[in-house]
Image 1 (spheres, rainbow, N blue to C red):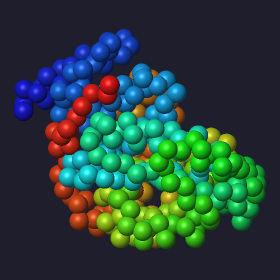
Image 2 (cartoon, one colour):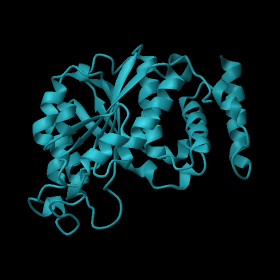
Image 3 (spheres, rainbow, N blue to C red):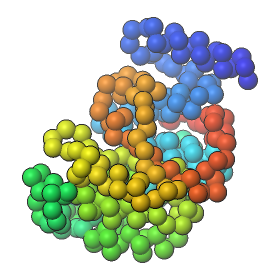
Length: 287
């Protein structure tokens, strides 16, 4: 074990002082560091498909690794805010690829009103950026593109609780792209239910928190702050310094600053040790 760790550290040090990424970093698969395995598979997926959404891929890979290390065989991934559907189609494709890596099933769900954005309620919903009926969906066209992802249409405030009661596999990755503070708060109901509905740590991507007029006092960031203030044992936190655990070109992209984790401290599996790549087992190379 010690030799493997030392070898991985030596390889990592060499890569840091080299210019540019390694041409064939297969040694990452021998490492005990989870980040090396995630980086390897993320790189392979992006090589195979340059248009890959790396934030979806990294979040789904991370969720699948955690589920595998906890002995789970099935999880769910969700996109809140589907609009035209390109993201949901991509998440569906990524779920298929990640399932092949880990040997577990990943169910995909997309939540949307189906008729565009609701009307912003007040300044917290950023009416300077969003208006009612924005980001419309062509439902028939989108359903024709989907292979197995499930669309859940309606106001998320009305649809999330029936979903939580439907007995789906534990949720491990969530993309929040509903734009409005009010809709984000409704989606956060997911994190307040029975812990068996969720992995102990749920990987989250927030689409609307960088640039423009986004702030701590409006939109998705305000929703995160208010959720945290209202719950003592459930917290949503940024993944601090994530970019320093990634490889080029991901280190220089904006999405690492948009990745968070919903921590369920009251989950019976939260404290289960899952510190090395070997805990997940079953690592395979994407073909």
